[in-house]
Length: 263
Image 1 (cartoon, rainbow, N blue to C red):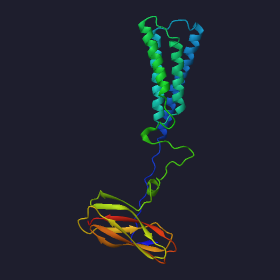
Image 2 (image 1 turned 120 degrees about the vertical axis):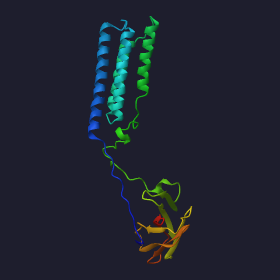
Image 3 (image 1 turned 135 degrees about the vertical axis):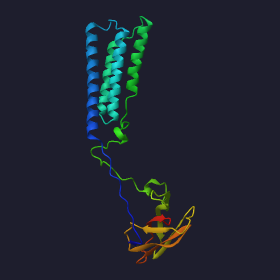
Image 4 (image 1 turned 180 degrees about the vertical axis):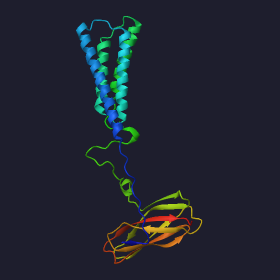
């Protein structure tokens, strides 16, 4: 198929993750998880050795809980920067073990001990409840990391696939960076069976101050045809599609337009 003019644009290159940043995030997340798990296991072992009947005061409960919560926060920060999700869950497991070792069974000998125990249990429960869900984390820069088996970047679906019905025409009006009024879009021109000529009409609202320049093109290659801007006026354009041979069946020819105000 031929056209009076053709203009095509390229897709921007896909942005990739910074390898060094991802490596640092992985190391931080793994370190926080290892520290939390190790501390939790040590505390459980020591508490089991002395017996769970031994009293643990707020001077131990609060610092242990604060340190565990800080390690969970560090693991979550690493996850948001591209670190491993497993580290976030492991850090939470360490926090739960540590709180269980120093705050259970709960005692209320004094109001301070009761408050410290309640606060520790609440923090551990909140950490487990607010654990990041699959697909909720984003690496640094706000770009989702693609699965290894998937392409790093996919072109968006055609506009027609995102509409609830059949696309007839779609246009965007804008002011160009270099100056001047622009209109860009696509119209689908229907050609009936047995016909060689068909027209489509695009209105300009508001109308251009003077008659604009119109360039038309198409990427349809099913038949031999020519598309032209047959009549151009300040308030609209008539697009003409002329086939080399009569259509054997009804056709829909997509025509792209670029309309520019005079320089």
